[in-house]
Amino acid sequence: MDATTVLAEINGNIATVGYGLAAIGPAIGVGIVVGKTIEGVARQPELAGRLQVLMWIGIAFTEALAFIGIATYFIFV
Amino acid sequence: MTTAPRDPADRTPTSNPVLRRALVWGGAIAAAIAVVGGILGFAFAGPEGLVSALLGTLLAVVFMGITGASILLANRFAGSDLFVGAFFGIVLGGWLLKFIVFIVLVVLLRGVDWLDPVVLFLSIVAGVIGSLVVDVLVVARSRLPYASDAHLPPPPSDD
Image 1 (tube, chains in turn purple, yellow):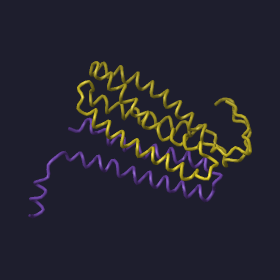
Image 2 (cartoon, rainbow over the protein chains, first blue to last red; image 1 turned 90 degrees about the horizontal axis):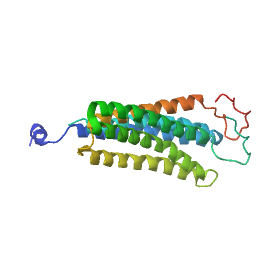
Image 3 (cartoon, rainbow over the protein chains, first blue to last red; image 1 turned 30 degrees about the horizontal axis):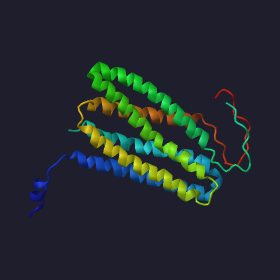
Image 4 (cartoon, rainbow over the protein chains, first blue to last red; image 1 turned 90 degrees about the vertical axis):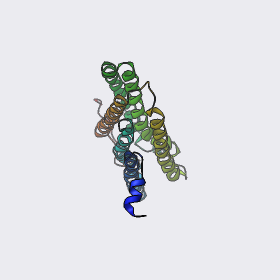
């Protein structure tokens, strides 16, 4: 069976792929934000409070797109 | 607002007041967005629009607020040997749980006839953006000591 036939057999909503992408992107982003925070706190534990706030604002921005991406389920038919 | 000088033995991270303030202001801005969104939703989509706007704003602000709330919860373990593990376990576990619950809610709410999907989507976007704006404003206006165990003079009273 060649690739064209396989692709022709696939059915469903292509927007579903978008929900997966909406989860992967922010997951990588939050992973980087948190990993760098761990690194920073390990180097300078007395900066923990400051780094936590920066981490929190970084997570907030990263996850915002995930929320909007997943919420598009409501409008994509 | 003046704060009492910190106890030198106090190991609580200095981020707590900032996060708490962000949660309070996030709730306030959510109420404002819910009122405006509810009026617009009712005007454009009737009772379903009103319910959708209220629900969408609630979802956005609760789910955006969980990050800050989980950090506040995790900071209760400050000073214990398990702090680093507990902190990232609670914050990242909360993040994962939040997204699973959000995806399940979105799937459950998709087909119901008492919601208007477009109003719901737009109010979620408005709630997320409003929450981000509040977060940025609170952080920009916050006064964080450079180190958690440093003693600073009292903050200015205009805050």
